[in-house]
Image (cartoon, rainbow, N blue to C red):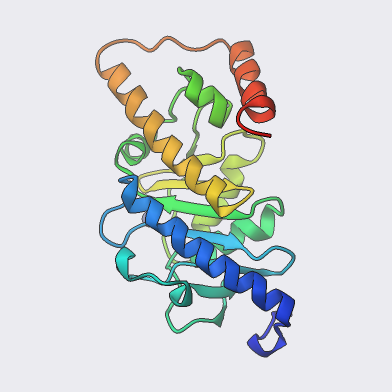
Length: 230
Ligand SMILES: [Zn+2]
């Protein structure tokens, strides 16, 4: 049974208002990190404790996005509140939230270097410490899937299952990342493009030197448990 707009109580309303502002602000990080061209790319975040998500409206310019223009949807991708049509990837974001309860944010971009790897249907091998840290191994390739329904979401969930990477390269398309929050998912998208570019350049000039699996494990564990401010 999906929630209706009039059923939103003041506490939930406050969460949604905060999340609209947060998701709007996170969208500004996509062009500022050179991850998107024109209106491509989108960010969504789950409303904590509710079967709801906030996502980008379809086809609006990044500079025109406002907290109010973000679209509130249920986790079947139906619009609950919004003046605009939601992103054409809404069904796939919703599928990810339904099947990965720990995921609080999803990002999609066609960032150049990562998408170039996806065009070759080639996983990015884990050959630098930054990859071991953030991704815990290679960044895998997911299946080719048509845009519009939840087929992409199915491919994302299936590919990330049993994988430490929060990023997947959807074949011949682009990047999907997941995170505990919208910000975590944006970070994974930024890091994915950064390592895609570095490993591309490395391979253009010679053979890649793989990192041993035990070193990847050690780096990933240190990064997840000790890095940054606690
Ligand atoms: Zn796309």
